[in-house]
Length: 169
Image 1 (tube, rainbow, N blue to C red):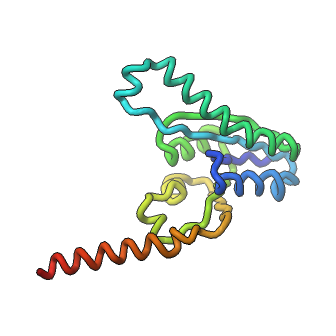
Image 2 (cartoon, rainbow, N blue to C red):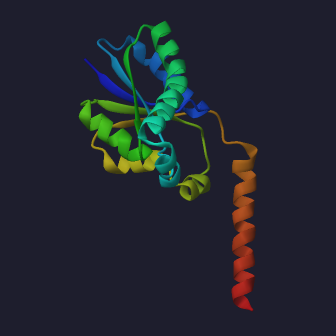
């Protein structure tokens, strides 16, 4: 029996991972998939004013909306699965869940991004790989947008040039 963890946030990249599991991996004998949606925590100020029960209801509603797409796809493919959600740091929740459910591997779908964009935004995938002992399979989706391929590197280059000139004066 193969148990895998599929982090799912409903994004285009996450759908690539979902499609991979529902298509290519569904033929694995005894496959069990744990689909995990990780919700970011609300700020302390918001949580303090609305209360714990309201925060939980909000997170549960958001997770249910996102996880319904995963449930439909896995049901249609005939893949045994469980739907889960947590609140916290995405990478840490993924690592902890894989350990807790004794997953054989983690399958993460992502959009293609330039190295510079991944470095700037602090990749969840890199953090998961760094902190887990479970193999991580990354399913790359569509190519990076034109803005990510050209605009962001050009902007960073312009900013560094401006800093260089400012330091030279």
